[in-house]
Amino acid sequence: MKMDGEQDQKRGLEVAIAADHAGYPLKEDLKNFLKNKGYTPIDLGTHSADPVDYPDFADPLARGISNGDYERGILICGTGIGMSMTANRFPGVRAALVQDAETARLSREHNDANVLVLGGRVTPFESAREILEVWLATEFAGGRHERRIQKMERLNGN
Ligand code: RB5
Figure 1 (cartoon, rainbow, N blue to C red):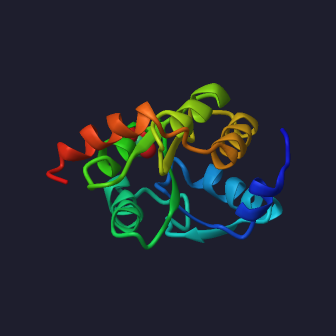
Figure 2 (figure 1 turned 90 degrees about the vertical axis):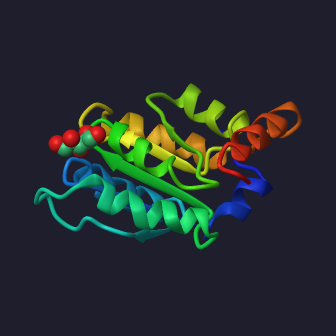
């Protein structure tokens, strides 16, 4: 992937990350990956593989995105489905459940996704790292896509 000045600027960016027990191993792997790439992971749990309920971990991350505490977030459960359903209930949260690098890129370019959701039991760690790298490096394209996002946000009464 091309490294340019714009991407260099992103280094140091804080990225909130949270998982349930099924996403915990991938969360730990991606935290290291983020650190190695120069990002600062903000770990909102869970902190072990003991069973927990995914909404309890989606809530603080999605709430933080919604109120502007975090710019970008990553949520991981077994499939990514429960985390995305929960996160998308919060105004201003655009959580994208992604399974490959192409949809990761499009979720940023077209949908301005501010939360990346991964399935820790269905996405191999190496694919997840590639997805995350592309997702963090891709800018929102704006233009016609901006109008569509505004229409989506209006459904929340914004
Ligand atoms: C936990 O067993 C599993 O249901 C959860 O991680 C997630 O996949 C739900 O969507």
